[in-house]
Amino acid sequence: MTLAQLNIHHLPILLIVGFALFAGGLGARLFQRLRIPQVVGYIIIGVILGRSGFGLVSDEAIAQMRLFNLVALGMIGFMIGGELRLDVFRRHGRRLMTILLAEGLSAFVLVSPLTFGVTFLFTRDLAVSSALGIVLGAISSATAPAATVDVLWEYKTRGPVTTAVFAIVALDDGLALVLYGMASSVAGLLIGSNGGRSLAESLGWTAWELLGAVLLGVIGGFVLNSVLRLARDHDKALTFILGALVVVLGVAMAAALDVILAAMALGMTVVNLAPRRTRETFNIVERFAPPIYVLFFVIVGARLSVGDMKGWMWALAAAYVLGRTGGKMLGAYLGARWAGAAETLRQYLGLCLFSQAGVAIGLAIMASETFPPAIGNAVALIVTATTFLVQLVGPPCVKVAVSRAGEVGMNVTRENLVKLYNVGNVMSREPVCITENAPYHNVCLKVRETDATVYPVVDAEQRLLGVVTVDGLKASLGRDGMADLVVASDLMQPVDDTVAADTPLANAMQRMSERELDYLAVIEPTDDGPPRLLGLLERRAADRFLSRELLRREEAAVDQEQSQLLRDAIRRKSGRKPRAPS
Image (tube, rainbow, N blue to C red; front, side, top):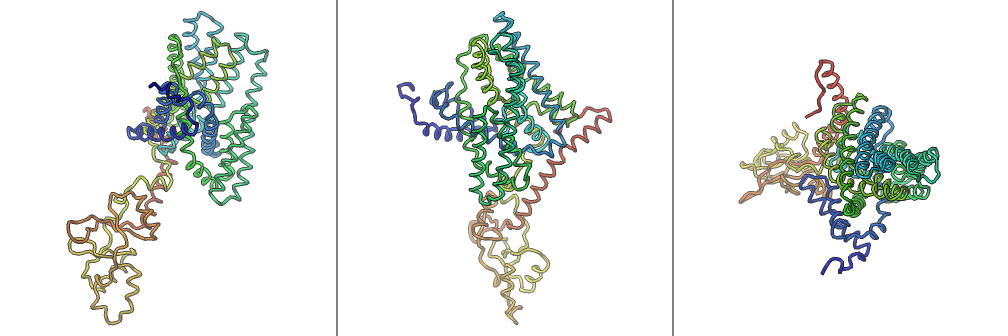
């Protein structure tokens, strides 16, 4: 029995969604074990399920799930906007705009002549070749924020490269829309398919699409910020955030505005109106968003199809990929150099700009509906085919870039950080112990000389017998005349709970919180008798360790760019070539 005989194209949409989520999660876990970004796993699972694979996700199902795509793109745009703080643009605005224009225009400048040359070689039609070249050149400037940002979130990155990537991918869509507006107008004039619309009219529509989206997002941000002042409960806050986001997305669609840009403006407005209060707002969305992201990328993979491309179009696709890759790499390097940015930006930023999906596919679909089939179908097929490639290659390149730039793991919350350690990494390996026969006077002396609150009682072989606590010691003070007869074994209490050294720190902290414990004894079982004491995990000490580590990482991330700029300046002054960190 074949798949077609199973009537798979009529599976209930809810079953497809559930299966896509489950399979996408498994694919992501598999690829993470191979040290490949999880977003690649999502896309591969989508390819297997979709047009290029078993066809389990039909075109009708993809069309029905369009709302999921829009919400996912909106959330991604909202989260990117949350990274765009005005203080960053005040410090780095000129630098970021220089890099943006350099990498976007370089891709346009390289892709246009390459695709024109290949098309003219096969078609010998100057007008069609010119129109196709400038349209593909304009689309090539776009960078997909979703896959790129997903990698940055997955690896908790922070630093100059991460800051630049967030800003560039947020603004790249706007640049691509401007270039496409101009390119489509010129292409229409070349082949006579502009419907009588002038170049000025086309640019006016592009300006409305961009500026209107920004204005809509700003208004929505002011309204949402006002509501969040009154919403203290997390569940209510999530409801208001999602409600505001969906309203902004709906208005943007109805008014023919750029959806991603509107969501970015919403997030940027909220985070700049109340930076401290809205930190929890973005944490709430981040915890809610993963299933939507999984479904989004699975759908992206499911709708990728390259089976309809003719032979010469593969040469055109190769020229597009080579021109776009070279343009992004060269433009990012030159832009960072002209802007006087750190060497890490010059070397690694270009690797973060390969992914291309949402806006590029949207523009390709728009081109297929606007231009004659000779151009429209070619644009749609080329962008679809190359999207499949760059969506697979792009995320690993982002990982390589941020790893070599030393920015992985620099943007963690306390919840993220606690998952990185085991009990053995944090415990006190030399707790203040008391032998079982220690006199009462010696016990009091140790308590007076140290600031511990619990003292393990051990035998000669360092096996744990019990604990003496400060509270328990206070209770013994009423034994007048008995001090000389009391030893530590008389004062000790049973150990409340124990833990192994290889237990995840998150589990141990949760256990202490649930049982309202101040400590856990870290033990190693013995063949006979009490377990051997390895150390002591105190909640207060663990909290101090996590706070110090968070502060260290934040300071390192803040200082990284300035340190790199200073090193580069010293090396240039001494006549040596600046280098990136190892």
